[in-house]
Length: 195
Image (cartoon, rainbow, N blue to C red):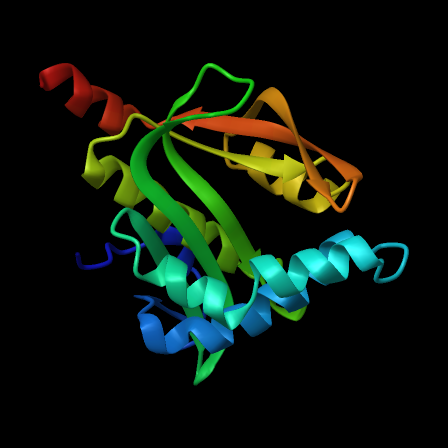
């Protein structure tokens, strides 16, 4: 599936960033960036044992290698030069959002290297994820965002996403409350109505 042009990516200086789909050879760099962004986001009071265990389990090279082989899972990479500066992981099969009345593609995670944030990279990745969901025939995109991630909550609200419910994640007995956010994708909804 070719990537469609993203207005947000086009707003970046020419040659500043390229988007591409990941393959199995990318597992190591995805894992490294994922651990970096995860700990930068969640370890606001230092790296606690629950966060370290989650990082090394969920974001291991082996875990990403396994997920990269899944048919309905797509990874989009944002690269600057030869370096990975962001990625999006999505599920392209219709899934029900926990605690919300939304059925659509799931954005599992959208991570951008902290130094590369606020440069349109997250917006470009999100627009591409939305385009993939629409091309797949899905009428909505949903995801969860930790309630302590004020920057992400503001970013998604600015992109037209709204809180539709809540979900709680537990790492080694510690609870992390998340907002379930979703947005209808009009072109996908129109395609659903035609079938």
